[in-house]
Image 1 (cartoon, rainbow, N blue to C red):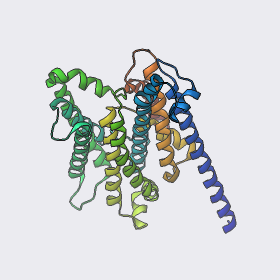
Image 2 (image 1 turned 90 degrees about the vertical axis):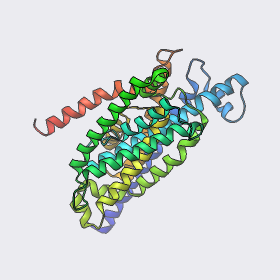
Image 3 (image 1 turned 180 degrees about the vertical axis):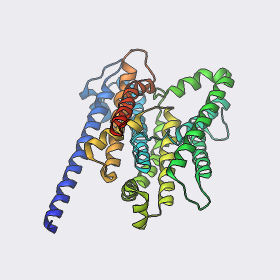
Image 4 (image 1 turned 60 degrees about the horizontal axis):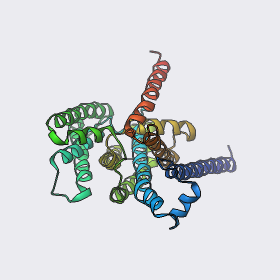
Length: 346
């Protein structure tokens, strides 16, 4: 094939990627505006725009600026974090059913945040307590998984990493259950938080979440080419001069960072990191240069829409969004299992 033909194919591919990213961004913008408008008190689109520009009545401004906007923005952050972490895990482990929960990161972060809730941690002030504990135990989990998985040569086999993650994740899940048993007065708060929800979203949480999520996403996207090579095969990636162990550890640290942040502010919300990357892989293909940013935007769209459904489906009461994502995600997971079973001839 002539060089001109290859260049033309590349330009067409990049143009398609650009159209997809722009289209997803427009869908996200529309979803945010719709979610700001819908609720117990419906506010027309033109009023929402007026309020965002500084106008509107005092009551409507309070509803949009103090209640709905931080919740919607936190939803975009949480959804983006879980989806990009899921896409990263699926690429690293070459498995479409991988997600942050596979190697115990979600369980570790959940234990840290639950411990902060039960103990009323005072050594870190205010809104920083729960994220700090979630980060700490997410990284402790990753350290334990790596310590158990590493062989004498310093190599970390994927299969051993997955098995160690499942075991250590189960341990932290058991510890969370033990915390619930001893929680006392904090039991209801811990249980409701573990269901996953954005009902207590504040501007402090939004501002705390932004820096670590931007950092984690930037690291992951910077290594998208290396992730492509690892997905093809570790031996092939090594032949290209990629330090597979080092890149895998960096990617897992970045995925742990964004996952811990999401868990700390929203609890355990399942299936986002499984559903969104898989659907977008069908749409954009396996190349992580476009799959990762698409997953970030797609995860944000999914989370803000499911959260709006959670707070309006039984209005004026609301459901934890984790219930909605689990109801939607469980059948999808079964579909993946059945597809895998059929493809492998089971």
